[in-house]
Length: 124
Image (cartoon, rainbow, N blue to C red; front, side):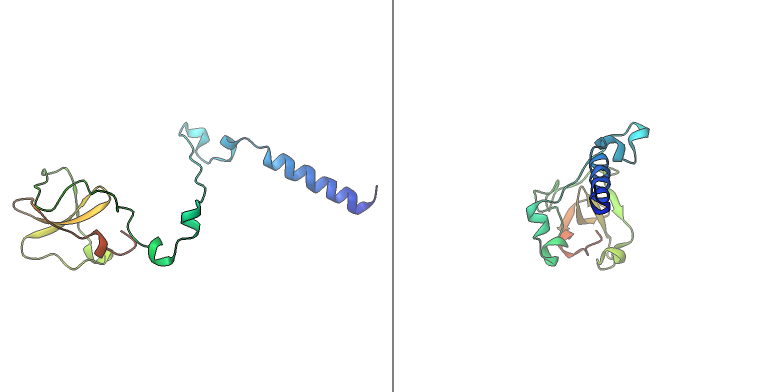
C-alpha cells in the first residue's frame, strides 16, 4: 500500500468517525437537559434577496388590530425607538411590542393607533 493510499484511508476513516457522532453530542446544551434544535437552510431562505431577508417575519395576521384596546401590563413598551429606526414618541402615545409586531398605542387609553412594524429597521 502506497503512502498516498494510506493517507487517503486515514482521512476517510476520520471523516466517517466524525460523521457518526450522535446529533446530541454536537449540541452545546446537551448536558443541561435542554433540547437541541437543528436549523437547516430552506430553499426559500437561501434564495432570498437582501430586501426580503430584512423584512419582518410578522407578515402573518397580527395579534391585535388597529382600534383595539390592549390590556395594561400585557405587552412591552418599546423604550429605545430610535434604535429600531422609529421616530421618537410624542403627544401621549408610545410604541408597544405585541408578539412579533410593533404598534403605536395611545398611552392613556391603550388603544392601538397604527401598526409600525414595516417602518422598523432590520434589528427589530
